[in-house]
Length: 65
Image 1 (cartoon, rainbow, N blue to C red):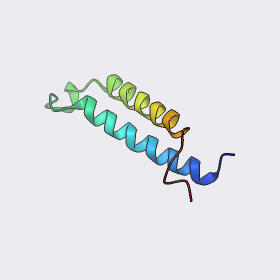
Image 2: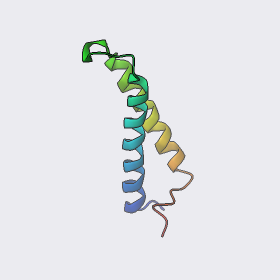
Image 3: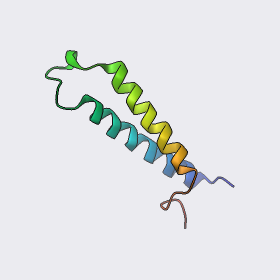
Image 4: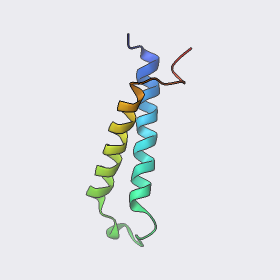
């Protein structure tokens, strides 16, 4: 049975993974904001977030008490 704590922990983990994947995609090659492929950044972040949510289905230590 899914709990409120699980959804909160999974959401936080997905948001963090989104940010990490987006930052990794931007990398150090962009000098100015115009050099960034924002569609690619959002796509990489979304893929990371979905992956984090799917992995959370196997269990989240921070949600188990």
